[in-house]
Length: 199
Image: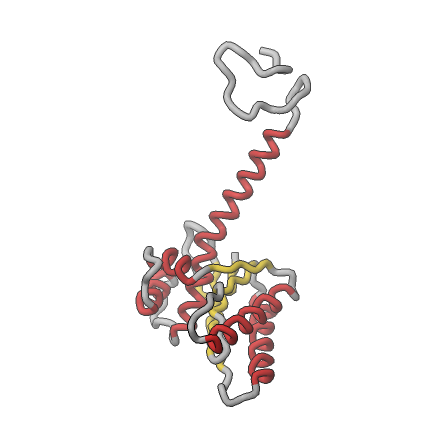
């Protein structure tokens, strides 16, 4: 699976692409940080981000796009810019019919370092180790984007398998058995058989 992670931001937006699956080595495909000058008009900055995100999705064709979930903070201006960048990432994925998932910062930190309160230096160090990089990705926005992708590859693919197994189990429980009726939902007492089943 190929996952494109986006650490949204108006001034700096991290984009990281990682490929792999649960239980296997992960590979860095691409990482970059898109910057927009604070002195430029807001519309021009959003257009630059939209173009960069669209180009990344088109070039790397991810199976999933993962975006950091935006939380309200004291700095309303920062939150607004982050939310706008996150929305652009979702639109870029939606235009290509690619699924979008959101992960909170604490979820990502816990998946990467084992602690939901890890700092940026710890996240960067673990991303470097997991992807076997010679040089740590900088700035932190780059490492955060890669961490989002890694988090989803580890947690998202595992969850998808559990969901698929649950769906199959439910379908099997509704499937009629020989002699009519439905398959039993639980174990039956010893010495007895479900109705409609011959011993």
